[in-house]
Length: 159
Image 1 (tube, rainbow, N blue to C red):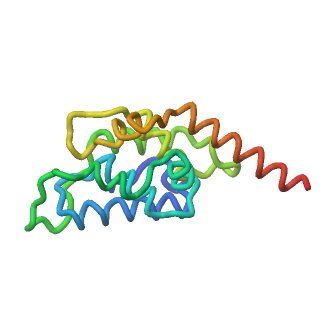
Image 2: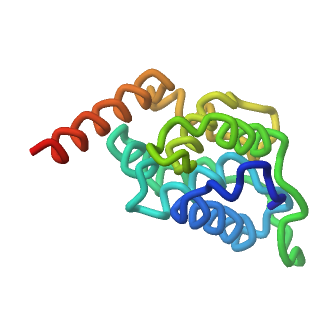
């Protein structure tokens, strides 16, 4: 994927999720990397805030994988040609909204919120937005869960 302004602030789990995203698209022989691949990448790195929040809301790796069913594969394709416009929007959102980590770094929770902000597109690789909407995942619910986690973390530090 392209280098983005602010990418030096990506946490290691964020980078791991992006790597898993690319691996999944490549493994499936898909021409483009879409938001569905990105959601799978987030969920595949199980210890991240984004993955934990998604699972707490009923979004599992299996559910995300089902979103990619039926997309044509290209057996001779060594690796995806490009990322979709929706993935670019998610990454742009993540790099411009780094308020989630106390040290200014950008974690996977920014990707989750970016997926929710990106909505859906007619591109079959970009089904994450409609999947999350069907499961009742909203930016407000994710923000509330992030705030709850910050409070719990702060209470642990105070005690």
